[in-house]
View 1: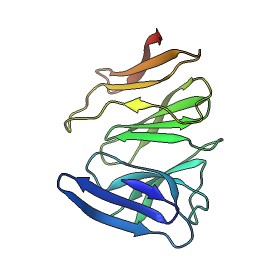
View 2 (view 1 turned 180 degrees about the vertical axis):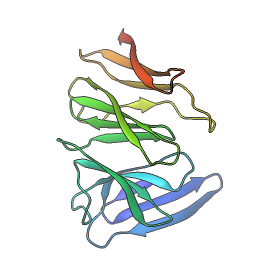
View 3 (view 1 turned 45 degrees about the vertical axis):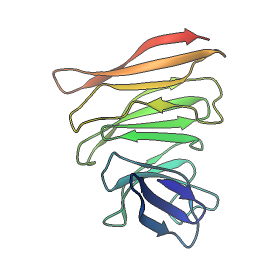
View 4 (view 1 turned 60 degrees about the vertical axis):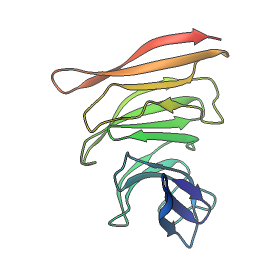
Length: 172
């Protein structure tokens, strides 16, 4: 998937083929990510942004219905996003925000945020979800001190809740 100043496109790499191209006549996007192999995307408005999109919000978009499912409005511009079926990671300059996504995208819950070093490039990694089963989510991002990496892991409880743990700060 890729974002442009005129819309977004979805391609397959094996075999290489275009699945779709969605033009927006009044603007484009700075970030676009798919939630696994679903028809739902996370979109962040670009410069200029289409009507109803912003560089400081993340919109979950149903591409089959061509409509928004949900919008997360934030206080600062979004520098990066990462998605998997059950998790959305949003990078905002000096912090990251972690959200839990229900299986049918009906509920999005803010779970945790952490401060990081000034992260203008939006550097973050989220482990992929290999199966449709809930797996442990692991996020890596620059730590609070230069030369450190913060590793966070979400553990689910038997009651259905979850909690993020600071697993390590590695010095390099």
